[in-house]
Image 1 (cartoon, rainbow, N blue to C red):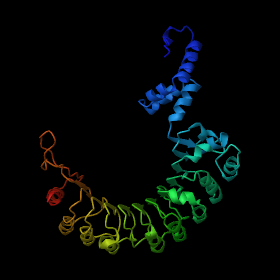
Image 2 (tube, helix red, strand yellow; image 1 turned 120 degrees about the vertical axis):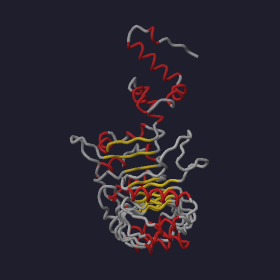
Image 3 (cartoon, helix red, strand yellow; image 1 turned 90 degrees about the vertical axis):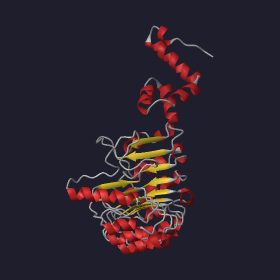
Image 4 (tube, helix red, strand yellow; image 1 turned 45 degrees about the horizontal axis):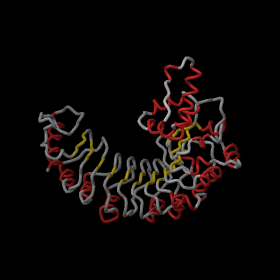
Length: 376
């Protein structure tokens, strides 16, 4: 072992040279130490010298890069040998050109290739607005072992048809949705193609894909392994497919989704459903009776504008596994085991786990009766 007394060095140049030799002689020690540092501390450490930056880059598994950085330095992902999760975002630098088809295809044709993309597990290019289906297909051919892929509103039927066979087998999570604008490129045809290729998907997001109808959504019934599905903002959906492995369903803001759609879920279509979000849907208190027939339901979110009647609460009382219930201005959660209602962990009395923003006396009475029904 070598011992270095850096503080006794007289010049900064000598100190940095000794530090560089330390990183070279004892890389495993520094890697072990870096695991205990926060992200900001590692960034400070990486600014010491090139050797320190190389050590830090070797530990990074999740990075976010502006798309123009790929244009100026296409082999930048190769600097991170342990890279598993990559997100490309649209940069705000007006002096840098955006990542488009011509630049991406020219870099992918480089003899050195992009070895940093070959081991990726997660890729997010939802903000790369200048890429076509042809460029996306070439990129996915390089990163064919992905498990999580976010294409956003730039995806279309052609890009799905370009999925490599190895990607269709390895892919577990796929995101076509967008939280800011409506997605019109994903339609019923795209879902029919997807259901025939990616049968091993476990998570699928179709948020605000407004052109999807019941026909396209029904084609997803072939995905027997799908566990999480988001159709939030899909205004043309009025029926739900039968997905035997589904555990989480986000149908918020599906204004055409009514009580009839829930009957299929309760009649064996999704026997293991645990989380159901129905904010701003056409669900009534009569539909809550259907929710009461879901034996594994743990969380139910009806949104802030839903008004629950006593009959609706009585129906939800049959949900023995229910742990969280959100409706109106109230959020009801299951009491901690071993603690009675109104008692905190230190024995002091509190209001309850029910939270309400209303102040009228009738709302207070409703909150109390709701708490009692939930506890019962």
